[in-house]
Length: 270
Image 1 (cartoon, rainbow, N blue to C red):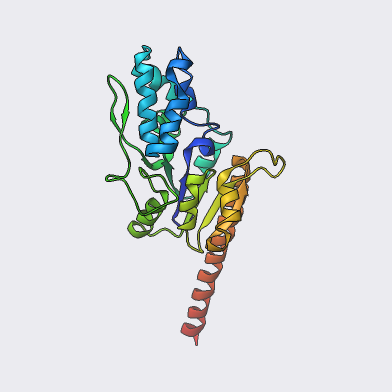
Image 2: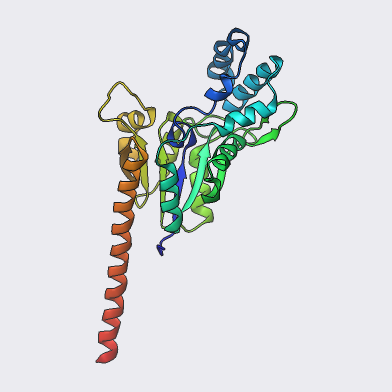
């Protein structure tokens, strides 16, 4: 087990999961026209900008079509995770790492998904919009109460950068490693220090796949980024880089430690 205490913060949708956690929920609709995602998305993008409100509207319209809460929970459990998540979580855990899931989805969806795949045991904390009510329909509250107004990058209901700050102030971690893919992951990346690591999703082999986090950091905030930046496309990419970086860091610390004690022995033996 490593002597270093490292914090790994993962985005959920399209980072840990293959696709958005809202997709299997919306696919439950018997009548897509009555669900009317165009209308829901318009209000989300033009009016309130809060993902939890958007999903509450989805849940309400599904209930009007006779979709029960238990069907939503079963759909949460079917969320497909990226290949290699289980191995990565296990490796982090045995090396004394802490795993936090930071997401603008909701805590219930993430917990049900991870429990169904026997991965919740590795998770230190879920930082996400909390579910206030399950029956008769699922209602999701805002993570930020009152709504945050200081960060223009993040949505009003959840600022990922402020969560990074909270963990830095509260706990003494040797490194914070953040892994994301979307535009709402940019703020978190910018809050990292030079000793930290950020992973932004990017497919070097397929330029048609655009992941906003990498593009925004590269084009708008590259000179403001203080941490090391790595790109990833699969969990295997991430595992290889993390192993190289953390093992080399641990070896360097061990060498310095041994040099210190060797110097003391020389002084004592004089």
